[in-house]
Length: 161
Image 1 (cartoon, helix red, strand yellow):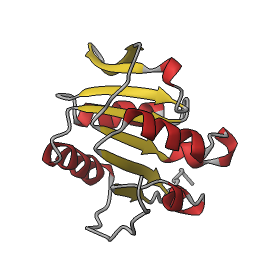
Image 2: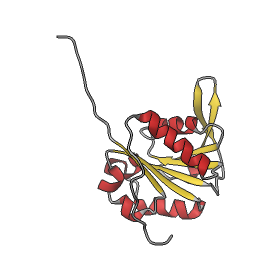
Image 3: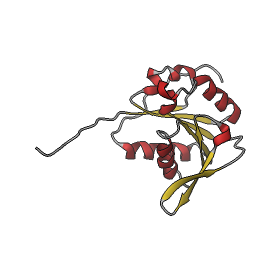
Image 4: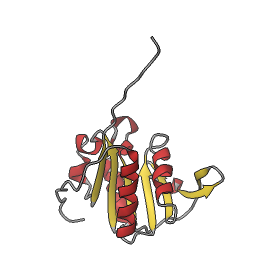
């Protein structure tokens, strides 16, 4: 990998739908056919299924905690996107890193992810996170992201009087 480039803001929108739409467009416009989602177990898995569904015409995989010995293939089944065991993933067009990886409580080291990126040699490295976790953890200075999608969540809770 070369020097880490500074990313420039392309656009801002609210909600998950624009995030998924922009992701789908990015994958399509980059001629990406094979995508590996990498994220922490449990927290990132549903996001891999959600983002995988947005590009369901592509070949998609989930690599929990960056462990190539535990790769799952994303497949469409009767209730939507699900995961099946898969062996021997060795090359992808894009790696999508989910922000859960950078959360200290999950203990995934950035160097492990850099090795994974090097091994799978993708054309594109895409970060997807919420609340600027990649920036807060300094991963944006360590990983050469081609794109970084950063969402912010505002929670409102209502109840009866």
